Length: 115
Length: 111
Image 1 (cartoon, rainbow over the protein chains, first blue to last red):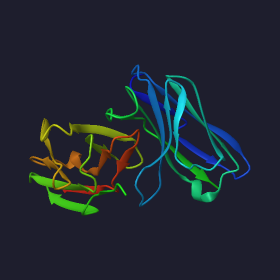
Image 2 (cartoon, rainbow over the protein chains, first blue to last red):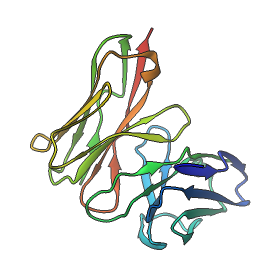
Image 3 (cartoon, chains in turn yellow, purple):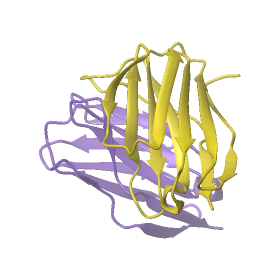
Image 4 (cartoon, rainbow over the protein chains, first blue to last red):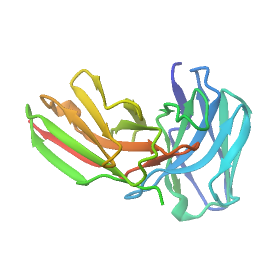
């Protein structure tokens, strides 16, 4: 595997379910990101992790819970979601985070549908 | 407020033509600007990254420019091909952890 991978690629879940999205980067990067992409809206940054520590939480509802066990893996745990949470969830990584603006590399995304 | 705008939202061009995609941003204190390509239902592929100290970057048939004083970047695609059809996104680093994205331009190359 190379680059940034995400599983599953598609997920359908009910509002009472609990599921998790997984992201893995094979680039030796220190920073990882979760973004949400909804139709007709710009990508929204959700969370940023640098060296496994969360450095930004962009006012995301608590029904989204990130986890970064090491610098190569990032999870997004989902519970009691709403239909408006249906979107493409993208993971990205970069050499580092913070000032300087490092180039970000994206995974293929997980298409989430909440019924 | 730091914002990135891309106009038009959609563009159709006959195959073989050269074209320019536009991106504007509100804050000239930009660290860098990144252009991405996104195919339907897929993730983002990084095309070019321009640092604030640079005026342009080239990769194959793609050339991206950056003008901080006017708050503009352009992505020039030479000799367009049907395989260039995709949504093109620009995103700016304004000196913090986050990339600020535009809403994209959906490009269709007509064979």
